[in-house]
Image (tube, rainbow, N blue to C red; front, side, top):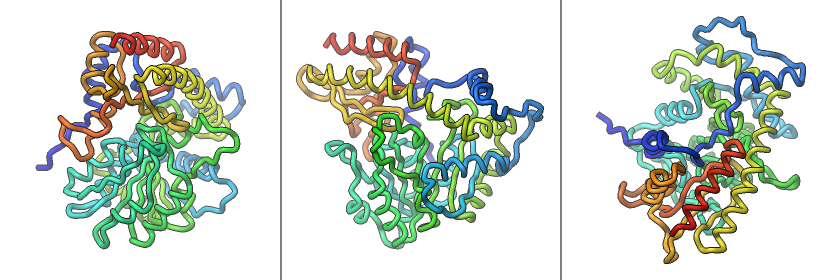
Length: 406
């Protein structure tokens, strides 16, 4: 029987969330209520949710109109390009989409290359299935950049079956430039390798200037290379995590067919009423209002976090690479001797003493190659900046007081 490795991040939140008075752990932008969501419809006099829809099983492969809205959303991100047809599988969140891809297309003895640091699922699921995992490590000293030459060296001819990337990245808030994405596609094509791109945070480009290049989705290469998959959901930038609506998108219809076959063993279908609400949220006018709201929340909170980190950086207590995308920052904490703190011990002591919940980044994200007693990224905390601004200010106040104790 395969051993299920504990999901360290989720276990941490479950263990300590009941103690939390304020939090900096979440990465779903301040969730919308149905009233708030439907208000967007009243403002724009656009379509509304069909409330006569029976609360029954939804379409097994996803309601056609929902799949149409998702493909239109992808195409809207690069309208100047003529793209290949995209095919969609509807799943219960991105976590289900990722699981189905990894479990369906990787087999014992295969080799996969995974961008690192990243969400634990992306390397733990393959390992549990007997897949050899190589970590393609980003460089914290160079804005968490990735070296395509290192990727080439990691490829094992005839054995490497998949390259897994996560952009915008969880936890660093870094994205992969289009030039690097182009190199990834070329390397994959030369070696007949599948690309899985977890792009759940892709709609969240909130800290960029008007002249900043926004790296495209991996699906921008759909007309060049077919063996690519993008996964995403309505949970993060769309502020609708409770719907549990996610997807896998690919220009290769056979890939989507295989995912749907595998999904029969996981779930019959995604709720029909949830699909109705998701379709409503993805109409262009509604989608634009939701994403504008999310961008405003993230931009304002990131400005507050920047001021906070820079203040404590000047005192030798914090260090970071400021994110311009995504929902989180990876912030390193130092003690009075200038050494990185034990982030697991630090965060546990902080929640117990102050009621502030922050994710210990080294402990929960830095276990790609090491034991539970030793991990990469020591002293790093993953700081979410997506909650309501008043709560965010209070969380920073509590953390500031804690930093000042030493």
